[in-house]
Image 1 (spheres, one colour):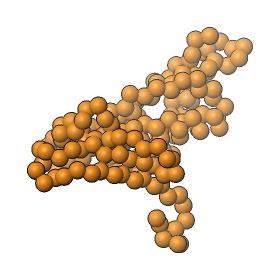
Image 2 (cartoon, helix red, strand yellow; image 1 turned 180 degrees about the horizontal axis):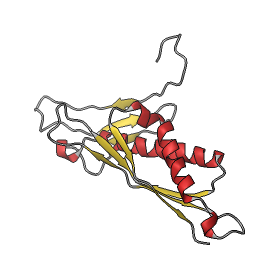
Image 3 (spheres, one colour; image 1 turned 180 degrees about the vertical axis):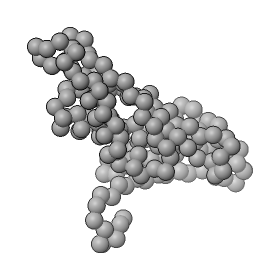
Length: 166
């Protein structure tokens, strides 16, 4: 925990693993369990399959990309709500890139591809929605995203916005 004079928000995480590395790199299990207190339910993780992990379990690299994507979503919803935009759906297929030739090896780029649907203004044609303004809000949210601001990794935003039918 932060020191007594710390002012801000602290986020807790706990991981647990048991096994043996005595048989070498190829033999030990990568699966482990993580918690995010005060949540009481944990979830299972592993290493990336390229590093001998279980492909059926999420890995830390995916969680980093997921954190950036989730933060962008939450930041955007706040900006949109404050701006009076009725967002009715948001989907993002985010990608993290970790080139083999970087040393030290790291995720060097995260690309967020949010697809946003907004409701048309009641009683107005769909063209009344300012899609450019919604896209500006996505970029404003990106500038405010705590996770993107915490990373040295490049986080790129490639949004698309449309008016929901009906």
